[in-house]
Image 1 (cartoon, rainbow, N blue to C red):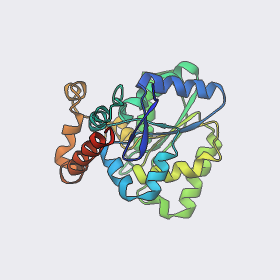
Image 2 (image 1 turned 90 degrees about the vertical axis):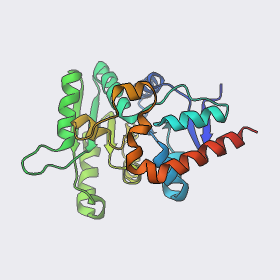
Image 3 (image 1 turned 60 degrees about the vertical axis):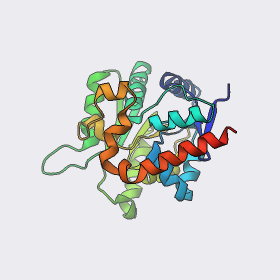
Image 4 (image 1 turned 30 degrees about the horizontal axis):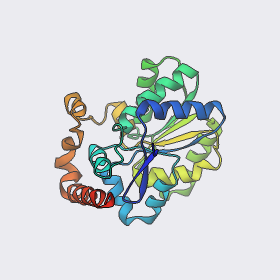
Amino acid sequence: MDRHVVLDGIPIDRRTEAEIVAYVRDSLDRGQGGRIVTPNIDILRLARRNPDLRAQLADADLVVADGTPLLWASRLARAPLPERVAGSSLVWSLAAALAADGRSLYLLGGAPAFFGRVEGAHRAARRLVRAYPGLRIAGHASPRFGFYRDRATLDAICREVIEAKPDVVYLGLGAAGQERLIDRLRGDLPGTWLLGCGAAIDCLAGDQVRAPEWMRRSRLAWAHRLADRYHGHDAPYALGLLVRAAISRQ
């Protein structure tokens, strides 16, 4: 079986979430790291007009489909994906595996501390450790919005992550920003897996609510976001993606 399906020029791995976790564990055992991206319809739409983001997606070691419309498109392309692999789910399953192996995790993202409230990455880390006591937290940080433009802050954050030498880093900073940061960190952390997970750290911290469980089971999580950006921007793109996938199989 071909391990990939190409959607809008981006090769997407045809693996289950369990297979992704097993792949990462095996790679860590060999001392090898990598890059995981979890594109949904919105990210593929942005990549279509952003060459840098497109190159970053194409350069990833693992690209998993975080969105049911991508599953539909893969079926139309006659290379069906086995399941949706959501970043908000993968952060849990990977953390469980790291805990079982006694490995470490760094969390970067989430809401900054304000008015005495603990930063989102710290709250997310506490929640994961409560769920998986064997998990080692190498560090956490929730930088303020726009920190990329402050060279000193950016350098300090990168230095902290590199010195922590985590086995896995969760980067929940938004598609374009987190991928640029992964580009910067990869060379200094060849044995670390870097997961761009978008809003997943906010979900872990309890600052953002996932779609209801019944919607996720019914593969309707995409509908949970229709009132947001999907309605105005992503729905037309999703329709175009399905048409292009159907044409590509001919």
